Image (cartoon, rainbow, N blue to C red; front, side, top):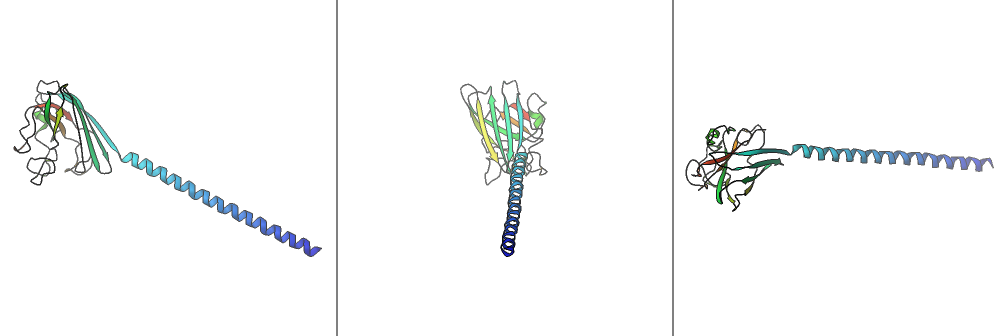
Length: 200
């Protein structure tokens, strides 16, 4: 009888030890899951922080009524630009980045020439013969004088340390005419009719 009691006690002890070990394993799994979830959340927050947004306002120049907004967004090494412009004459107009964030003059010429940190000839964006980092191109305005242009490149950045990519400290200029992508140094785009300074 004593032998039977001892056997039962030994069996109960083994069961209790196994239950405790099982609880320990469960706790370890829970801790790992919590750590993984925290890591994913941190990564999502880091991705959100990495996106930069800069919105600037176009103001009329050269006695025009041309206004609008330009929004720059940087994410994953790409800067996207969207410009929405009103008060234009119907047809094509040029838009460029100029070298100085100074819209103080009435004719917009205080912005200097096209932004050209690599000293290339003027041309259509991506041309093998060369192009300025500010050579965005042309866009269309409808009969109501409204125009929109979108543009994206990995050759720009917002506030980085690379002077050949950083658009902060530059200006957006809208021209009355079109860029012919040939005439030097600016494409013969005509009067500067709207200006926005790119200031972070």
